[in-house]
Image 1 (cartoon, rainbow, N blue to C red):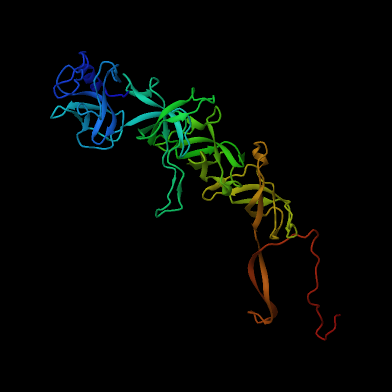
Image 2 (spheres, rainbow, N blue to C red; image 1 turned 90 degrees about the vertical axis):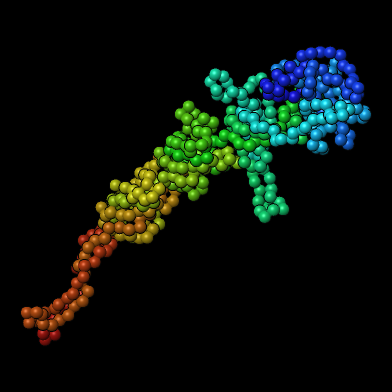
Length: 457
């Protein structure tokens, strides 16, 4: 049984309208029932040398052909007359091929021209998910009138579509490199496929041990198909959490690239159209809620991975609310207030929980109320049960506001500009860290004054 277009079917139907008994002409040809000059449709059988056996076929429906063993003509490759010959002497005419037979020059045989052109493409719709390098059940699409849109052809037999691009490049200039495949998709995605020639049907085994409930589907190779959007822009809607042995965030899709299908249509995980995006290890300690970012789809793992995202700021300023004397190391209990980030590049997010403590590992000193520069140096804890405030960072004091002081750095005794004997000094303006003592400083003797005669009285 074969399927043809409407024009072919009409020709066949016309050719077999007149039914008459079969006879053989003088040259030995068994006359087919086509009721006129020219040829007729036939199914090619076995081949011997250049000769083919054949059986005439006729139209049953508008586009189907069928043999009629009792009434229609046939030819045998082993007979002296009535056999068929391929006009171009091709040796690869498959059995059961439908051809147009016409009487030969001597009328001792029939002749046909076989076309082994590449089968045409069909549109299909996946009926189940397809993984890279795999195969999946699909159904052909048909054009719906009068809307001129394509819909699933429920009257057509299901097919099995294959991604044929999973392979190893052994014996080539890129040996050692493997291709995981080219096509992957979700149920109901569309594509183009070409029938695989010279291949047995795919067998979908049934539940029983026998073959009675097995299903067979013709194999097709995927030429092109729809894909989920490769790149998306998103906004995180929650903190980082554990997901399948790694880390992930929930996110809302802001936009997706112009060619792919929106991930919201195929992998959304709640009524608010949120999707799960996986977090590479180098983002995990600086990512929070309401962060905008970019992600790319990994077709092999069927996951989105963040490629860039707004992260918690690296630097910030604050005010210490207790004095520092450099002896706090290695504690993490310096009180701070007025925390304010310094945006830079992608690092422009506030931490989920506003810090109230900082560590002073470098022994900076200064009075309470001094401004300090903070550096984010690590993550204390990931969020617990989706609580943003439980995601806390460590902040290190890396600089502190310096106090301006005039420092005497040199002394001399002699005449001053007024020609007076005097102690003179030089001073410089310095900015430095200092520590306020707990009690007022006591005066300390530097030089003891003496009389001119050397006595202290």
